[in-house]
Image 1 (cartoon, rainbow, N blue to C red):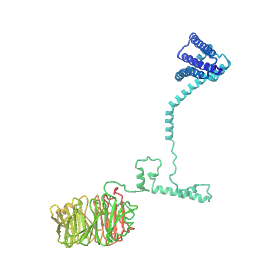
Image 2: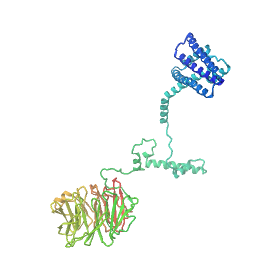
Image 3: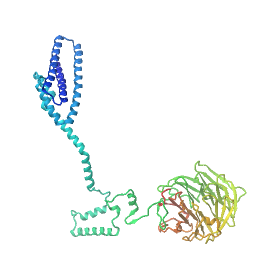
Image 4: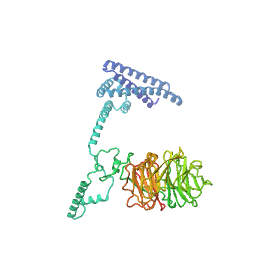
Length: 587
């Protein structure tokens, strides 16, 4: 056996015995000298026996083969190393726990144990090579003990740091809260830079000019504070509420705008935003005849006298054209959408009318019955989508089925009918005539149930009913619009109007309520900008519409979107102006 193998075996056996002895000494609280000598003697005898057995084996096997040597040596060394490794791992774990719990006392016990081991023969190396190996492996008794004590103290320090860390963090957070936060400017203004130049001494300027600039700067600041005061948004130390952004948007200096709400519409002033024209991509419809908003989609249909019908998307930004329907030889005079938005019906002065299906794109031209001499020059569709009423030539009103387009019956009036309107429940049909009479026809009873006189009217021109079924509005050629209670018009011959609007002086051609029945738009096609918005509940006209700079032309059609968020106004110059009614959030 070679010297290296012999040294390796000696070192491994020595390490295992030392660690076993160290474990026994650590477990014992008060080790005695006698027990230590006995324990030390036993490992020493074991070491001697192992050395003698190794010598005997080496003498007996003086000329072993390489294969046998390779087979024999790893088995012996492997078993010894595995056992030593297992015992050393357990000893290290126990020692670490003991050091963590005891600290300096455990270090003292270790020193005492090493002194006892030093007295025994097991700690004394026999040769110089063995002494060198022990110093390499253990580094000496004092170094080993000092390393263990240093590790124990480091663990204690780490524990103390972990325990004190939350309190330190809390103190640091409190200090950070008490410290003022330095704020940086969100934007930079060139005017502010000029003001800084006034106070900057490095800028080369006359001393008198610099002092005058400072005085001017301070005087302007004080004047601003006197007039405007200190607005809330300028206070950097204020407590910001969840709606602070909305508050900033609603406040400009010392002028506070009215808040948007879903409550009642305020009177006298209305908030409107001018958007891009609804037919900005076409402008080929000619004088606008009809504007219809789709009931479910943000789409509008615009029809003009030139026979062009445009379908556009309503967004207020692009208002992109989606489709165009050309009816050049049709002589278009009226256009309406069905309440479900599936069909568009176009009427003319000829003896036929046109039906276009918006879903399938199919178009049909339907004739007027041969024996009849009327045309679909002015018609209305009931809110239920069941009836279609058309104005005849000599005081007739023709009632058709909106589904089958069959003529159901004809209603004969004393005077020529000028305007038609259905009640929201589709139970009554109101017919305004060229005289002052208004006829009320019951669709359930199939007869005229009441005829009342429009107050102050000489020649009737238009009529409209609000969506909630509460009011009836009538207009005449003298520019007077009356608002009646619906129940009164169904029973009384001469009802007294709730409100009378006389702001226009020419014939009223358009009357339209919005979806909430709070707004009434009246317009006249005779003069330019002859359009007014009426607050229905108070019967007053909004003062800020139209403005002096408005260029609405001769208004021929006015229409609100289904939820009242948009207002479209068409004129004779083929323009459709679009406004956003800010009080209403939806389309």
